[in-house]
Length: 215
Ligand code: MD3
Ligand code: FE
Image 1 (tube, rainbow, N blue to C red):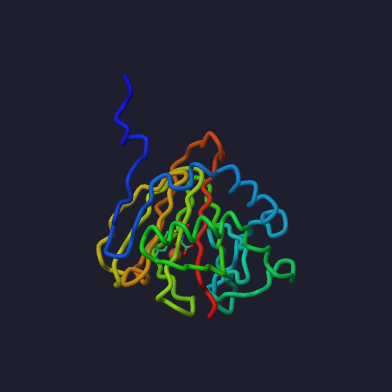
Image 2: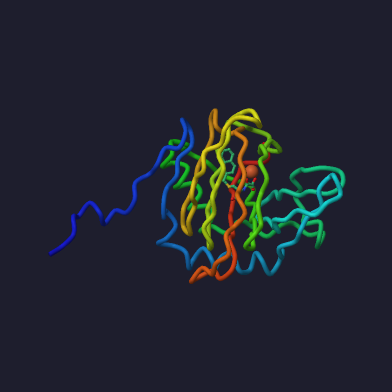
């Protein structure tokens, strides 16, 4: 007996807030091409722990691809066209990653999204990302698209004030999250990653966030 045809389409998009959409497993059909595209990026611009303006090191290791990359140092947070580690431009944004972001954004109602920055975050078990807002981009009318790979995470989606209550959103390998509009400046974070080994990615979580950072 064959299961209901409808099940073959997988889990449906979930609206988490007015302009925040989770596409569960959206990238599962193209994981290998995405990883193939990421490998040379990581060779040219390895993960590193950036320093915060307060002089500490971030728990999350990161790198970037695309015309602009998010950087942090003792002077603050900003986007830069060059990798401070190599002094060279960031690796180009691979077409397969750009295409995924544009298609996902369109599914959430953001037509014509063309990101110029892809921040790649690396989490080991125990790593967390504390509650913050993303406000280093020029144009808050543009959405952000995020792709989760590897170990699962619990994403915290807060409100426009730091003290607002947060909703916990489980994010798995292959999930894509899109948010924009009035949700663009919500506080958000990631709870400490639980110990584990992902069958494809090993003992890590990698998150890509695609943004239009410049003008
Ligand atoms: C919802 N990264 O790099 S991505 C970041 O999983 C960052 O690595 C997290 O926050 C990560 O700045 C979360 C998903 C995300 C990011 C920002 C949001 C969802 C959001 C802002 C508002 C609402
Ligand atoms: Fe963020």
